[in-house]
Image 1 (tube, one colour):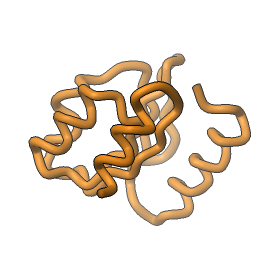
Image 2 (cartoon, rainbow, N blue to C red):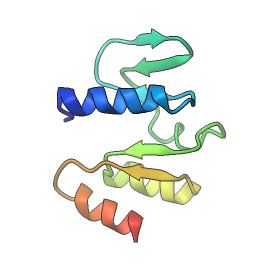
Image 3 (cartoon, helix red, strand yellow):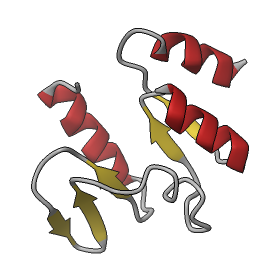
Image 4 (tube, rainbow, N blue to C red):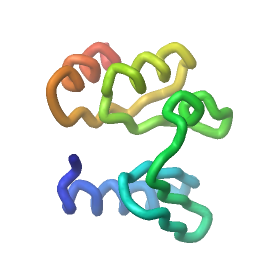
Length: 92
């Protein structure tokens, strides 16, 4: 789970990037401008959508393998257990 500071910094980076983004968070739906924050989405469908240029992932095995199979660029943000290893395998 992200700390409040981590969440704030990631939000500032996403807003400041100049690109549209979608953000999956486990809370009520929020909309701000053209960006969207939603509480649930299809984990298999999002990385394969043609508009996705980069997928920021906590590197659980499902999202990692689905993104690799679809050739999606990933930004690894592992939190615990096997996610550190998965992130290392993505990078290398």
